[in-house]
Image (cartoon, rainbow, N blue to C red; front, side):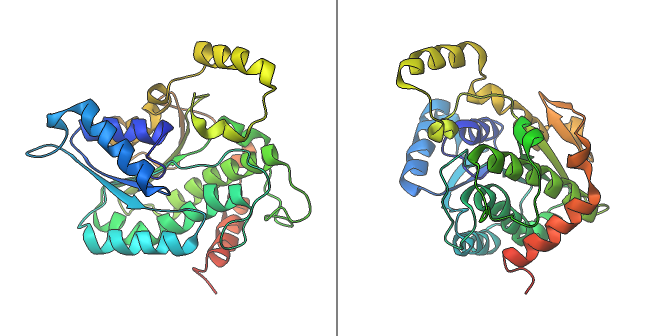
Length: 283
């Protein structure tokens, strides 16, 4: 699970550990991830790990660095005999204009390209572990995104909301194209939106100081808890109901219709081809 030290990822890690899974937490900040792992173990008690139980493993993974993604995958491939589920959960939300270590716009780089490379490097292990599953966390906000191939890196103009939406549209197009490529392999790929969740993902969103208490009150009243938001990820990772189901999009543990732009196979293939070059899978 990428980004498993907080929010949706942490909730998913906790519940899958409760189901006695061996969970690898791929996190950028090792200290924070270790602290989260200790808290999860304390929450679940002695039964969490050990004889017949699950296991929680922390591994460093910075999706804003292709070098880090490669190192993480190298270690997983060396240490893990199998990989049953990959949950692409980590995300950065509406940050100011920044670039990744490799020069990509931060939201597109982390939310799409980092996960694109990660998934491709782990595909061999996932295929060997079939039946296995890939779960891609997108967002309802994909609806406001467009894939502009002339300015994928937002060099010409940058709008943090638009770029987030574009990265989430890219997640869905990637999931659908990957599902097409994996037909017949026993590896399924599905995307989802978690709904509106109270997480620290929105730390870059500007809310006027006086409105903060009101915003917090509204969020507590109407937003989902991380555990509620993570239910669809957990469902797609573990439920027998979706065995063999692939290339679909889910919300609240149910299949949902996508807008036509998220089902454009030509755009999905073009995005795949360009992404391969951007992350160095194809020279």
